[in-house]
Picture 1 (spheres, rainbow, N blue to C red):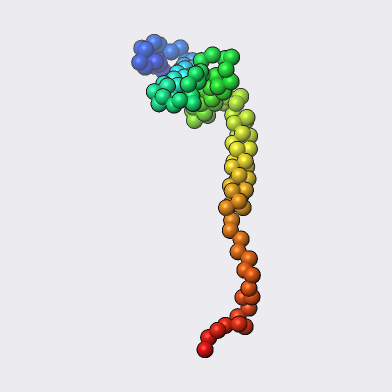
Picture 2 (picture 1 turned 120 degrees about the vertical axis):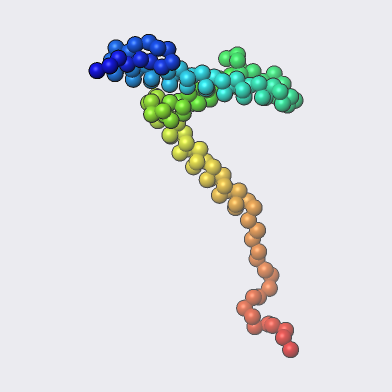
Length: 135
C-alpha cells in the first residue's frame, strides 16, 4: 500500500487511524477558532452599534454576568459545530434538553399571548333570529 500524505502539510501519515485522528483534531481546532471568531464578531458589532443602554457591556471580564453568558454561548457554538461534524460533545444532551424547554416556554408564551389578545364578544341582545325587523 502507498504512503498517506497529509494535505496541505505534506507530512507522511503512518496509518489510517493516525490520519483520521489528524482530521478530527483539525475539525476540533477549526470549531474552536470559528466559535471564538463568532463571539468576537458579536462583541465588535455590539460596540459599533453604539447602543446607549449597552454602555459598559463587557463579555471579556468574568466578573460580569454577561461575560459568563458569553462563555456559555461560545461553548454552545463550539458544541454545535462539533455536532455538525458528527463529533460528540458533553453539551449535546444539555443543549437538546434546553431546546425542548425553550420550545415549551415559547409555546406557553404564545398561548398566553393569544389569550391576552383575544377579543370576547358577548352581545347584550338575543341572536336567535326571532326579532328580525324585515318588513
